Length: 278
Image (cartoon, rainbow, N blue to C red; front, top):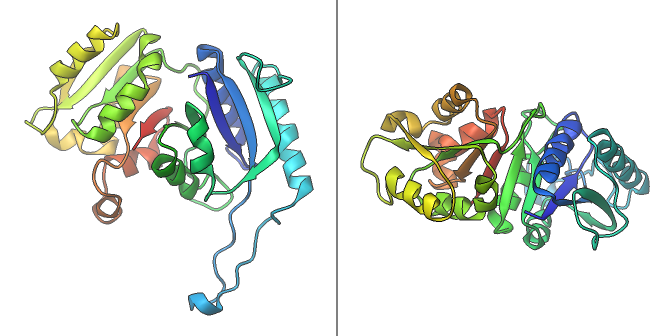
């Protein structure tokens, strides 16, 4: 996990997101690249799409906003014990601000394809914070891992890891992407349901991890509980874990919007960092 992207927008959770990213960079000797994330357009003022007027919160070419983000990036690096590096060719840990690039929610996913990981804040339930659109674009468009930073920065990251295993291809993909993180963990727990679900069992996953140099334990939950994000997060807290590994939207996104699901619940409520991929 040597290359990490941080799409930076200034809001109440900026410090927590940066602190989480810096913690990750120090643990895995990563290079952080900060880039200005343009604030979202306001909602249409009209009812009909054809006549709606879009009003930007911040102009696309707002030099002052980009400068403020650049200065904040450097300040957060310093606060969290990392150096601002001179170029992207230097090894981490450290950070570099890309002042040549400006991205928005429509571009952040494709831009993230050149990185091992993109760090975003947990979406806020109010305007002016991290956006669900940013997170979902990275999840669906980057083809890479996403680290969701909680609203309060953790004291540790990646030492005690929980894998929420449901047998899905999305979770298998996330697990494969996360091997380098899991190898550095002191404890890895695989949460599984007590029902027979399609895909490999928890014991098979445990054996696979062992063959890749990762020791783990299996913890069984009721089938009903492991399908719910709140129950998974309760297990995470009981285990004292500082990182969750989970596939994103293993049910259809539309179904989760209507009926709810573990991914949606974890994204909305997690207070520990979460590694996800789709």
